[in-house]
Length: 150
Length: 39
Image (tube, rainbow over all chains, first blue to last red; front, side):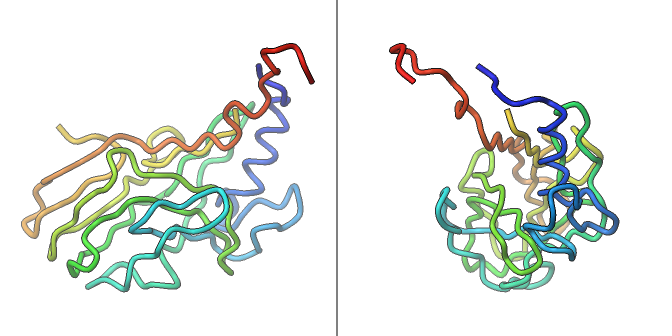
């Protein structure tokens, strides 16, 4: 049974996801995940409610360990409890083959503050050396990762 | 057909694998009542 007002859901989602200008978090609940552009960290093992998974190493291009994918654009804001879609713009990297599997993601603040995380649909996603892994960008439901409070 | 969530592309740009959207419902089930009638 749902126990949270849907307007509050949107306030919380907007404060914890990159819905501000240039991918920064909204500020309606303070700045628990920082004031700079949020990031997507990719992991070769499963994240949990308590800890990150093991981050990918720096790849041939498009992914740097410790930085991840920086959200340069704002996601569409949540309204009346709707999910927030990330990334706003398609993100990708070219694999160096080590490791070859993408398992989970963490949406983090600019200083690696943890927030939402999840396993990729169909994980582990094997990405051979020279191949590109990408997550579809878009507005709202068009984005490859949907974040919601239910 | 390409799913909207993630894709793996070969060097030629062709899709070699893809998967659907990843949906993270952070509080799913957290507000459910105790089915045994407790708190």
